[in-house]
Length: 241
Image (cartoon, rainbow, N blue to C red):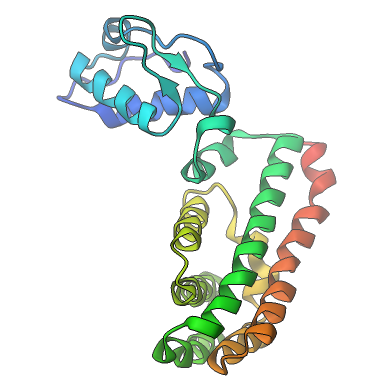
């Protein structure tokens, strides 16, 4: 297990134990099928009490990263088989080369699929007040003084579109994608071709405000496909890294 220096003794620091084990699993330091060190061994190695270790293992089990066998060893699961989208922000920084490229492209493709349908649904089913307010968010984007503020407002625009779609699964996926960006798993610069094109954002907002689902879906797809193209343009750079 990596980074074996004990954690400073503080009561119930299960978060620290959880984060370290999670990192070791996602990075491959602990392989699928491998036994996680025992509670006693982890407690001694990390300098925390056994309750903290137990709580950390419970969280890993809930995330689909380990299986706890009563009377036997706790074993690592294949996170790509059992994990959820919430792992994205943690795993992306750990990947290199072709694996990192594939993850980036996967994110871009999922954004495009979800965003296109969310725009369509929002135009058809979204609350009238919410839809009517979307062009004002684009106005704020146009007036933003720097890229980070423009990016924040772009996320607000999409948050409202996804909310207006009425699709809970889309909302949860959107939350995970935003968390990945803020967790430094996916750089916000990847989305620059979308964020800085206020006219394209306005086309989406206006179509939704008008209740035109076909126009909204087409505008959204055109916009979101740009990041797929950006990801593809980085293929060689990642694969040679």
